[in-house]
Length: 426
Image 1: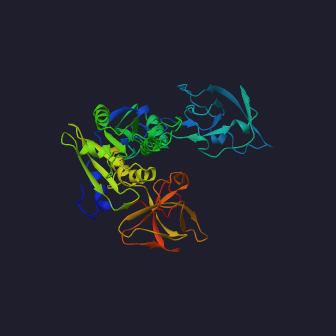
Image 2: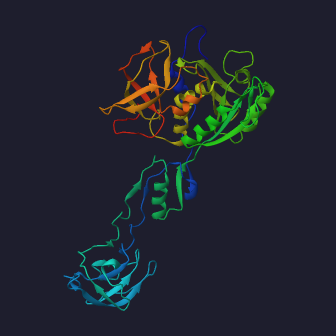
Image 3: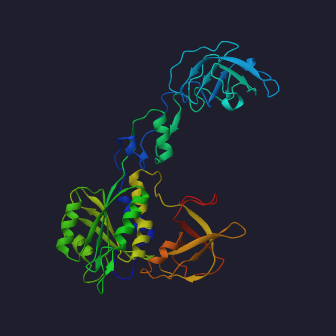
């Protein structure tokens, strides 16, 4: 817990406290179908060449080059068709000079084949074919091992498996793969005033934006999210919910109830003596000063307690929780975060000098190709709709009281890396 008085925990200190709670989950073997989004825990080498055999890249006719040399529209060449080879057929046919075999895409080429004539260059004959264009040696033939040789590394440990990687694993015959599993993250929203979306609001109520926002953010990272229904400001109820969820949780995230108010139930429950060990900090960050992190229960399940205002909750997740989840997934590096870029402020704004400010902003490019950023809303942590327009978070360091137009700033990208100038965060 932060010392009394006005002393604040720095952003770096609280992020490190969050990272210290987690480690990559132990690897396990998963069926290929279940491995998407997981991080490889092994180097993968191909056990065989790809392709495994010489095969045709076209529907056409397997030929010896000298038999069709000089073929043209004016001087076509005719050859007898001595075989018909479909894809998947293990054919031992040997191509004799002066003959051809009709062949389909992907089918193994006969021994002696030097090229494949596409069907479009012929009259499509079945027993005899007329060829009107000559191929070059090797044209339209995929040679064994052309993609990869047996024993060659195809995927490195630490790779987060995307659909293209899954395709490679299947192509080399892997039915299972050793990966870091996706952490199971339980998301708990708190607040007697919070109700489910779709429910008509009574005066003083609001819909549970945080629960859905954080659940989506967890899934976007690559973890498995389990959203728990809203828990009222009741210490007994919250304690019961947390205890019940620990059987399926690798991580717990709560929102709300961590400030200094009379009904800040999360802080009340997790500060009580017992099996839980949670620290609550006043962090030098805007938005999101009240933060907490620690462990729950005998299994010491990591818990991150975030503020209740939606923007504070979102920024807190990005700055503190996202790096921790990426570490659990097995991302390499001591502090995995989103990519950052250097940018230019398009407009000016103020910043509290004692805090590290994260400004919701949108980036564009100027005529010189530079990133230009402008805030999408005011600083209020309740201004949630502007999040939909934000494409980055501009980081204003401690000690800076104002950003002027034209100042160079650092921006955390909330979407895909848009340009080669972007770099990974240190």
